[in-house]
Length: 197
Image 1 (cartoon, helix red, strand yellow):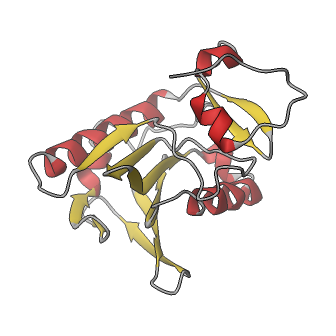
Image 2 (cartoon, rainbow, N blue to C red):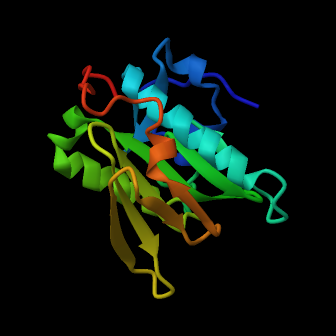
């Protein structure tokens, strides 16, 4: 259950942010906590939403009825390993297994790629979410996905997946998803960046 928003000069922790009803922050589409500051995010572009719809439909079909207790969620909050950290990112979608998210998904627009340092900072924050084993960045303007995987030693590896004929392999949950299903509602030849996320 959420709590009311607090004064902006109060130091926010991830735990407090995730317990607060997002409407208490204002009327924006979505909010994140970045280094103690509550940040409003722009609404999704039509292609971003279409990619997210294709992704969650493909995940729901593959996860339904599996005994591992994993399920897809869109826009759910997920806390860092240390809840007192001043950052809580909200991925576009996750696969949650039990109480913890295991895979985080973000659709990356062309405008976001212009600030690569911010993309790397976001990925580092997602790596700090308790339970996350894989981070998937889905590119909006081309059939390309980058999968980052946590190894047993805590290091992260990178695997590009390119082309509509390719499949995204999610090792932590034992799933393979064809890129053609993720991008099924997007005309990549006509896809443009609408300035949103």
